[in-house]
Picture: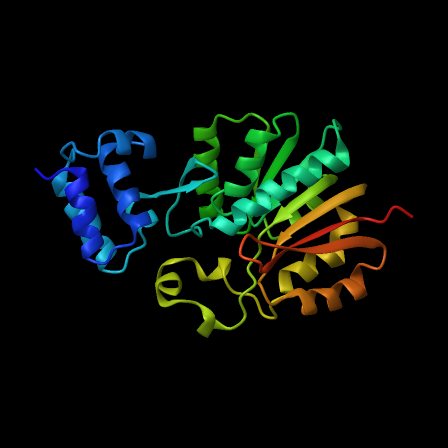
Length: 278
C-alpha cells in the first residue's frame, strides 16, 4: 500500500493540482490538514477508494461533488449538484459583512437574511460567528434548502430558519423586517464566460441572470418593503459590474450610501449599501 507522500508526488506528476491532491488525501484518510502532515509517511487508509475518487475527478467531476463536501471558512459543508460549490471570494464577503455589522449595529439584536443561500455557506458561517442574532436562509429551489438544512443540522445552530421562496417574497409574505441582507445572486449573462466543468455540473439557475443586474434590481426595487430604517445590504458581484450597478443605484438608491470594494486579487467583487445618515 503506498504512503500519502508517495501518492502526493505521483498525483502531482500526473498533473493534478496540489489543492485537489491534498483534499483527496485528507478525505480518504479522515484527516484534517495538520493530521495529514503528521501522517504523510504512513500508508493511505483506503487505496481503492482513492483510485475511484481520482478516476471520477479525471473524468471531469468536481472533487467537491465526488466527496459531497466543500470547506468554507474551515467548516465542512455538504454539497451536491443542486447547489453551487462555495468559492473563496465568498468567504471574503462573509468576513467583510461580519465586520461591517459589528461596526454599524454594535450589540443590537438583528434579523439577518442570506438570500439565494444555496448550500447555506454564507448564512450558516455568519450565524456561527454572530450567535446572538436571528438568521433567515432563503432560496427559490427546494432542493437547495434541503442541502442548507443538512448543513444547518451539522452546525447545530438554533438561531437560523430556512424558507423556500423567490428573492424577497418569503420576507414580504411573512411580514419580516430585516436589518441586514447578504446575497450572492446569479449574475452571469454571457454563457460563453462559464468554464465547461462548471456549466456541466453546477445548477444553471444559480449561475445565470439576464440582464446581469436582474436580481440586484429586484432587491433594490423592493428593499423598503422588508428592511428596517437602519439597514445594511451586502452583495457579491461580478468583477465588471460596477458601472451597470452604479446606474441601477442612481435610479433606486438615491437615499443610500454605497461602496464597491475589492477582493484579495484586486478585483471589484463586493457592493455594500446602507441607509443615508441624513
